[in-house]
Amino acid sequence: QVQLVESGGGLVQAGGSLTLSCRASGSASGRTFSSYAMGWFRQAPGQEREFVASISYTGGNTHYADSVEGRFTIFRHNAKNTVYLQMNSLKPEDTAIYYCAAETLFGVVLTSPAGYDYWGQGTQVTVSS
Image (cartoon, rainbow, N blue to C red; front, side, top):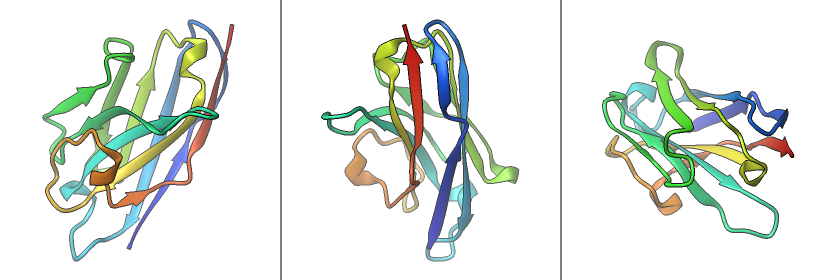
């Protein structure tokens, strides 16, 4: 089993920055963090969970939602079993619970929540106007 724990959420003014962290522990079928693709998703009240960003197991391939392209950066530190989401130029519409997720079979970038095997508990990000 893989456990994911997010941190770094909080309240920030529009235009500000936050960095979210997601630390993984455990393993899936003998595969460990350095083999997983990782993703960030978010869910605002009354809305469906939506894709934010994803990164391949090596970190060499990333993908972003159009709404965050150029403002958010996903990166990983495999030796620390941690994936990060650097969020700049935050907008009120970025307010949501942010979840990290692990894709443990193929290690490739995915945008659909259905492709991910494990999820964290989420961390709240609130951007005030």
